[in-house]
Length: 162
Ligand code: RP5
Image 1 (cartoon, rainbow, N blue to C red):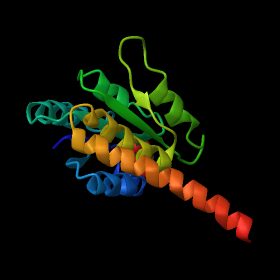
Image 2: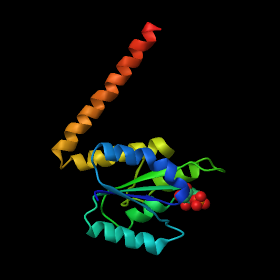
Image 3: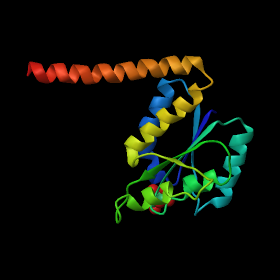
């Protein structure tokens, strides 16, 4: 599997459905695991080292509240780690955002925006990282960007028509 997605709880599952879809669309292999930095640190550690030895290239870590999952992963690997903070009741996601983004010098986590959009972008960023060594993915990304631009153009035309 090229991409490993960790979610901190089953309650985060909905956040990553579109991310999985986009990875499927790009033909990128991934594995999804529920594991927590706080509730199952040993399992997380084992999954990280297993994934590394099986040839994983990018980790995506999705968690809410005091979201240390991405940072925990980054502390255990030199592979790129993309963090996605999840909104939750109480502090609304600011807690997860700051816990994910404020990594100490030397241990980066590429932090996305909150929730589903953040997870979607995490998938795109993972594809971009993989595309550095995969011309086919590079081509697919160029088509994807073209389609995005076309959609904007069409929206503008539709507005003018109405
Ligand atoms: C985090 O706490 C999880 O990533 C989730 O976003 C949040 C709440 O988890 P549950 O209490 O719903 O399991 O660890």
